[in-house]
Image 1 (spheres, rainbow, N blue to C red):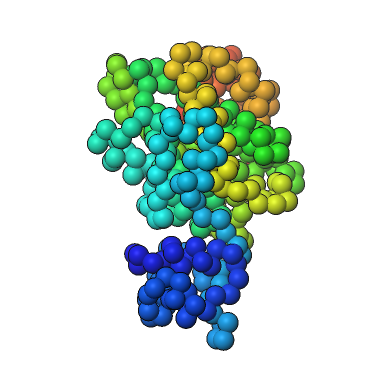
Image 2 (cartoon, rainbow, N blue to C red):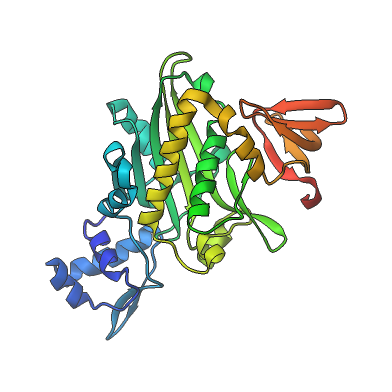
Length: 329
């Protein structure tokens, strides 16, 4: 990737026209280098408009992630969290999984301006584009084996709900086991997702790679790529959120809940999680990994994070599956 692409994007981030000549002077490079950077932008899905006599511009202003601004927004926990911002990466989760073998510090966050192959649950692809979503992964090391981390994704959901409330989105809900929804225009729409990948032996210490994707300001093009109803923060608030400040809020809440989870696991978060559950006490259909279909009413969540469904044959608990509201099927 052209090494001046993101310096060029930084100049264009105000959404105004900038001439190639002026940018080449600012960056101390040739005009042809600027042209090549603009051409390379298309390879990662960034559209830059060119108008003769005016120069180049993005479709709308964007705010790029900035390590120093994120650190500032972290406040008191700034010294405890290791931040790295990448311009482009295939997947922040994949990056951390690879780097964690090199003893990357506990409480390390990798955030990216662009993910080209972001991971979603069940092998899906998390769609993201420059300035349209906030994508990051957080490494947290536990003095617990992976078997003791059931309910972790539900706990992360609580951190996301609390963060959304901080910026004024008070109607966000959780969908078991790891989606964040907004009820909008008579349907549930996804605003954020969680993907957790674990490393470690069955007993002893383990590491969790916590991947988070949050929709900030989706374009129509991006919405068309997403295979389910989606919504973004801009639509909920009527204005854009500063991604650097918001990431600071998220990391503060994540750090708080993860510290508690180390001692009490999911049980101390159970009641709060149920209060946010979109499908609580509602008729649902659950599709299991073997394609078995279970129908019933959501009655509870276990202290370990399992979904409890009241069926015609009694209560059953599930640790995984694809859930949907029956009325919407």
